Image 1 (cartoon, rainbow, N blue to C red):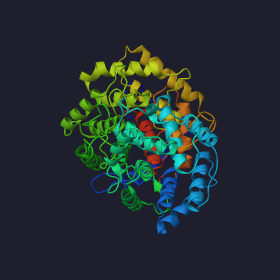
Image 2 (image 1 turned 90 degrees about the vertical axis):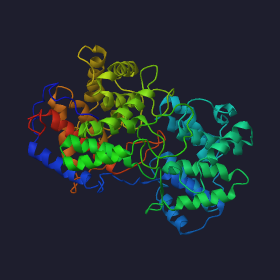
Image 3 (image 1 turned 90 degrees about the horizontal axis):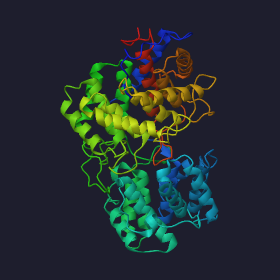
Image 4 (image 1 turned 45 degrees about the horizontal axis):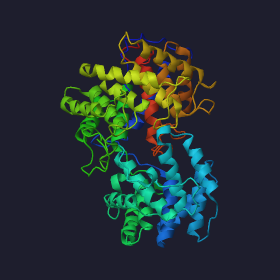
Length: 543
């Protein structure tokens, strides 16, 4: 997410029709809005909003355990409000959970589960397709939906040994037990799965703040005799995190991610250095993640950053953004912390030059590779490894100039991050230069007539995708699409300085979740890129 050297390329001329004063006022309002969300220690603590998936699982668990309490009534109210959702999976989840809570047999057949799973997989990376299909089957199974004919245990019912991060390992174990109960199977794999689930201490804690995984674990244990008390206590633990609207979130918090990305955006936009130093100091102190036992298979990323202080699982994205922020604010004060984070990143780089999200040996991903390249940019000793990563990105570019889905619903997300990674390439790296040109071309060609971008070509313009598109084209040579995007964003700023629109972040892929501030942060970052590149907007190289 770095700001490229403003001397290369040369600054863009101010686009026609764009008022520098209006851009500066909008940027100042958004700086104030995002900056005010930082606590005294500099951390940004934003709350994840409720989601239908977790809420339906919570209500069905209440029905399964005979729990009747005021939280149940609030949860019913939340789900009733989503029975007419435009999302087909949300409609089915809400309706089936409500039916079970009322004691009705929701009926249906295996074709429903298969159809919904196929719809989900259209928006997920290919390498997780089998895992995600079985997850949809497991979720619908606990909501009373018969399994389709192709349902089976993960890995064919064998004890898994492939490299897998903690969250996926626990998810796989929960799915194994849920599907085994529905299929009437028990074997060594189900015994190993039970051991994995009990290691998360589901009675006393929402493991790593991951509400969805906590619910899947409890449903798996509810179908396993002898664990009734664990399920009862685990449900009581979950109820402490019910949101005011009656629903339940995907995760409890993502403080490190909000702090690092918010810090990068604030830095790019010219926020108060004292605030940035507080944010950086807090983030630096959180390197390593929560001191919990790792349930990963294979060599997990360690010595980097996790998404929050509750979470032990380090990942490439959080580590990369934290490193970029610390290096931007004070590379001298945080030199030791940065060295440790760089070593953590390099330890999980794949033989193909790319980076996975979590575990060495897992599939390399373009978006994660771009994140790592940007973090490694200031380190000359890492140049050979960075060049391999850039080659992986060039090899991964699709015919239309794009990349496979990452951790965002917006196609523009991977595009803007790879374009920024290309800024680190040497002058003689022709493949990276060609990759950057193709990115700029596809972003230009998919800009809507109103100046914004949608999640996918042809979708209505939204705030986040437009921010991603603007960042990308700040590194091209034509000021006209930059001006159109700036105008679109300026017209949609709210009175308090914030932005809105649909969420883009997904977890587990491709299920969208929402931290409201994670809409404002990309827009602020986009203003920062415009400030650095466009003349008269305030950046040192753009006056």
